[in-house]
Image 1 (cartoon, rainbow, N blue to C red):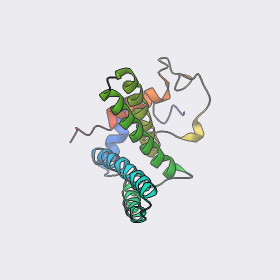
Image 2: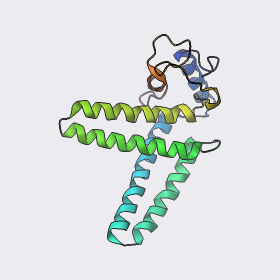
Image 3: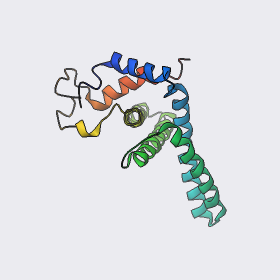
Image 4: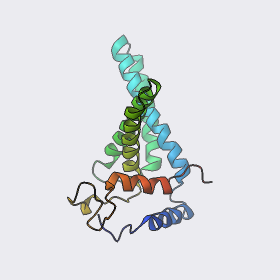
Length: 177
């Protein structure tokens, strides 16, 4: 990862603030929208399974309507992309939502450690979604280094997902108006 892109958390926050001032991104609304999109992907899945289990094709018609809505809303967050970033983004949100749901079920069964692990994975995927779509991650600059280090200058070695999660916590805060 290129150190010149994001030198520290403060630089990322400044970059996000600048984007907000230029009205390029409303992170509070976009975070809410990303959660709505997660739920729309889940609704698509439920319409698929219900249609397949019941043999009623009208569920597939509903699936298509929800899919079109999800695509329109996803365009509000993912404005320009290359290669498979669109699909990667959709699947990151979908996987994040599924892990969140499974974690919630584990929590309700009293399995707090398993739930915490799933919640962490869910948040890591969600952070990766934002890292890609806020252009914090430039895949051409990614090189193999120590598995727990972000780059060769990383002293804390909490890993890429850990650092990205810290950045997203500071930048994507739905409670700031």
